[in-house]
Image (cartoon, rainbow, N blue to C red):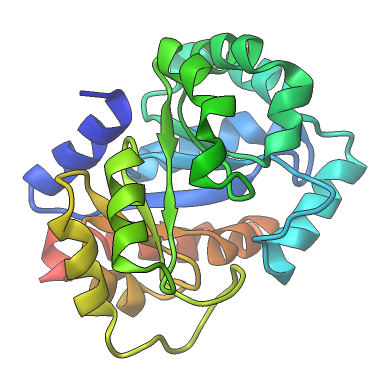
Length: 260
């Protein structure tokens, strides 16, 4: 079993729900990456999704786009992020999941990326602009490096598509909760519980909900019918404002006493 999947299952086995915060590497400077990751670990997160800034972020909403622009202005690149992570890899105790687009990996070199990413603590990769049919561009190198390729499942996917995606996804399944880009939402479709139940029928890989989740109540609600949540825009906004109290409240909402 992969380290990423094991971390999620270990969390749910003790009655909690997985909590995966998304951060934009380089937002505020790469020197912030180490203290941010170490603080999140201290709060008890399950894993950390590390966003790599990109010039054409098709899946990102305004908050994460703005963070990416700030990171790019700081000169952040995939190579620099991996170098920075490698400098304190021995202090990283939770799996890191790189959220990057395909071009930076191709420019890096898929095999070299897999080797360097593993040394830097990266145990999973999400590539939103790479369809399932193209996964072999990177999957062999990632598999050889012991890195999971996480698939996203959308609300508009057909049952046949959902089955293929869930069976291919490694580590966990990223179940997108909205039709659209990332960003905080005040409400969601009413039939999401049934959608998540359908996804889980195809696989024993844990399902995590992501996109739009921004309040403790939403963390609890989604935790009632899946293995956990991924919170992005709210985390990015809170970090930009040095608002660790909000982040701590979100993480605590995934814990046993507050989910029940």
